[in-house]
Structures are given as C-alpha cells and as structure tokens.
Image (cartoon, rainbow, N blue to C red; front, side):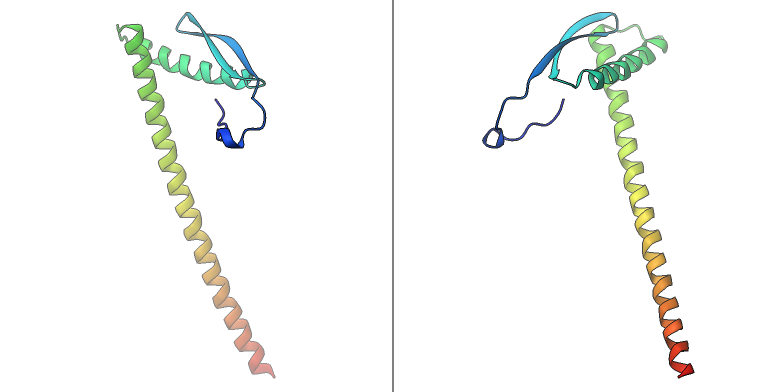
Amino acid sequence: MTKHPAKSEQTAPVPTTKVGVTLHGREYIVACDAGEERKLAELVKLVDSKINEVVGKGTNASETRLFMLACLLLADELIETRKLATTGRKADEDLLIAAVNHLQGRVASIAAQVGKTQ
C-alpha cells in the first residue's frame, strides 16, 4: 500500500498486518502495513462500490470480468482527475503570471509618479 525505500535505504522491516476484506461478497486476506487498516478499508469500500456499479448496470459477468470492469472505471476516474488537476494547475499558474504582470505595471506607474513629485 505504501511505498518502501530501496533495500539499501531500509533500516528496519516495516511490520505488516493481515486483514480480511470482502469484495462482492467474497472474503480475501490482504497484507498491509501496520496502521494502514483504515485506509485499506476505505479502498475496499471504493472498489466494492465500483463492482456494485457494474452489477447495477445489469451486467451478467463472471467475477473476474466484474473486477476488471471495476478497475477500468477506477482507472478512468483517475485519468480524468489527473487531467483536471493539470488543467487547474495551469489555470492557477496563468492567474499568478497575470497578477505579477499587473503588479509590475502598478509598481512602474507608482515609481514614475514618485519621480515626478521630486
């Protein structure tokens, strides 16, 4: 679940916990880092909701196919979220550039006025 440093950087093994999770009515045993159980439960809830979304569309598919379709839905959401984040960052950057340019103009205008009064 979490990224571990390269073996040369590791100082001590990270303790793991085995947790039973249920997806589409079937229980699986999953190992996660100690303390990550709550996060795992949230992930399971999200994945199970996507599986139920596929089932709700009347799909009469095998469990493997349901899981694959749920993964595709999640991947699609991830890609769209990344696109929105990139677009948002670009818009924020453009806004900051415009603000800096405006402030430069104001500073130049004020500096010109100060020079006239002396």
